[in-house]
Image 1 (cartoon, rainbow, N blue to C red):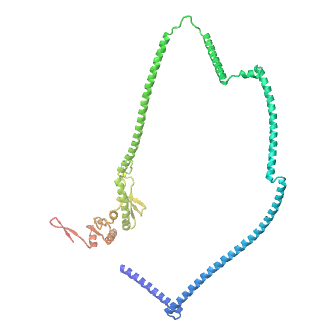
Image 2 (cartoon, rainbow, N blue to C red; image 1 turned 30 degrees about the vertical axis):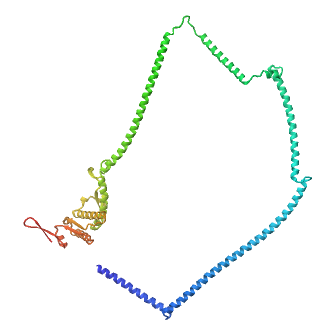
Image 3 (tube, rainbow, N blue to C red; image 1 turned 180 degrees about the horizontal axis):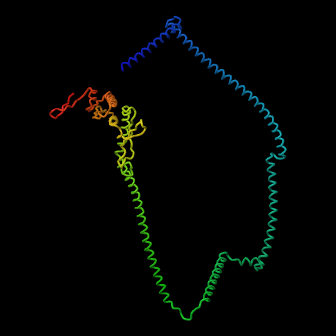
Length: 453
């Protein structure tokens, strides 16, 4: 098959080379016809001349483009200069008009200033003189109004003084000034009057209470009342002492309560932390709340088993003609058993998953062989690329039918082509016929065994 495939590739390569040669000959004849019978040297010389002419033409075209651009720039500059000249001419006409108007306004202003200056040297001096006259006139008018107001105030004050002296009972103002007291003296007199009024009111109240009481004729005995008063005072002192003791007890209880609260908080935090740690430990150990009863070791092995199942399905799909696919399952096991390392078989014919024990003997052997090969590949990958070059399979071939046995043998042959050594231990006669290299174990009459090659 390899030789036939190589021959096919060689034939295809030969046909491609022949087609390429034919196309090259056609291209050669076409080139010779275009050359007009000239040699390659003449054609190369013409080509060099044409290339030089092309280079000169391209250089001239570049210069023409540069000159065209320069001409366009000069024309644009000329247009801008013409526009600026027109704008300057229009600005000059406008400035001449403004200068003429300014000359007329200056002449009119000079005439107005001369008329406003009058006999003074400048308008400012005339304005200052007028302002001084106006200020003096305003001051005189204000002084006249103040004098009238002062006269009216004086007349009103004299009338008020005469009326106040009459009401106070003084004949002259000097007598009234002599009767004036300092403010401190007035305040002291007012305080004495207020205190006298308060004392009088208290005395009047006391007199009213005494008038309402019935005073006995004989003296009142106060000894018993004094004893009760002393006993009440002692009881009051004792109550104060008990109150102090109670306050001390309350403070001690408050401190103890705060310490108990702090200890309770610490215990609560430690309890919560212990609950978390205990839950984690139980989960890792496969106890509640781990409903799958999967410990940490099983969890790690489950991850490894997933890779093994993926590698095994590559072999099982080929050996079962794409019917069976292994699946790793961590579903809850029956009767509280540990979960995490379960395997189920998906049957593509029925479209449902089935337990491994429902497979026939031959199907179980194929599944086991696939898992063994998958385990070998995973171990090889995990061992840093170290290959497992030798594989021994012990029995199981007797449960296979002819077609399944051929499939299993073809798979093992594929392994052997990769350089591995595969050893099969079997007593099936068909295996003896298919395996050329054999080690036969024969039992000797003496009870021992002999190995024959």
